[in-house]
View 1 (cartoon, rainbow, N blue to C red):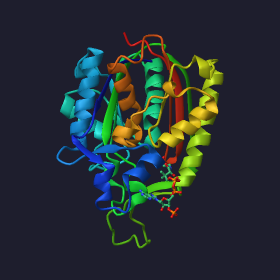
View 2: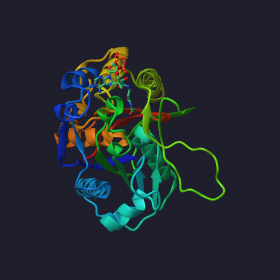
View 3: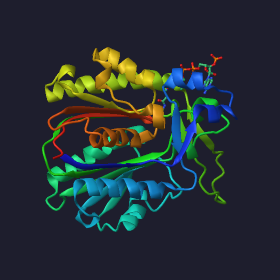
View 4: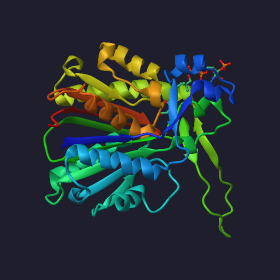
Length: 319
Ligand code: UT7
């Protein structure tokens, strides 16, 4: 595979740490020093479908193709207003594409899992030449806004890429472990006359310290495995694009890899944790600002609920 276009969309509403401190027992100082977040964008008037459409169209324009050229669409999303149909089916109508559509839920690692699926399809299916991936997330709708532990961490947003056949992928590493307790969001289904089981229904539950430790150790394992399979070292990587969950997690991974800060671009300060959208949003910013150049080696790495992790290395050759 080869990425030929990127896009992003963020809600207009900027919510600063001080705005949260107006109704939560928190402070700008705590949030900044513990997480690196200064503000986040939250959906108010727009909806997730608007963000998905804008990010998708930006990526198509950047790729220089139209929606009718897309042969397959994958959306990564944890939850939205529709349980069914899928976000990708709804988005297909909004951008006027005519292709098979599927959603995946790999939590915050969803973008890497979507890239892996795209790589397999592009490699094995003659009739698939262009794939659109859209990661669109609204974690603000499943966190508890009375709880300072989780609500301050997240932001809404969407990131998209268009992929075509190519050989830019150097290595891919995915792993999933069934660990529900550290991070979950449970929804009640409709009642039936027969189902008498007690069921939970709670906003996002997170054991922050457990997630933190799992995140650092798993990401370092994944990244080292990528070095091995791509036959590269940390020094060969131009930029590490890590899931934007906490600047301290990014820094802990960076320290274990013994690499300079300049190789770890971040935007968590502006957007908070946008789940699976965080890496494609960052990628779009780096690409559109001209920071990443032809031939650069990028290492993408994410972790999320599941517990899922994923990493990949690719050589950037968009033009
Ligand atoms: O995409 C994956 C999603 N999740 C993550 O990546 C989260 C990973 N974990 C983390 O990023 C960090 O564990 C947190 C940022 C969530 C928390 O940082 P921490 O350094 O692990 O803090 P802590 O949980 O140990 O809490 C320290 C204190 C506690 O008070 P006490 O018990 O020491 O009195 C908390 O009650 O900070 C308190 N606290 C807050 N204080 C002000 C927790 N949240 C807040 C808050 N404002 N928003």
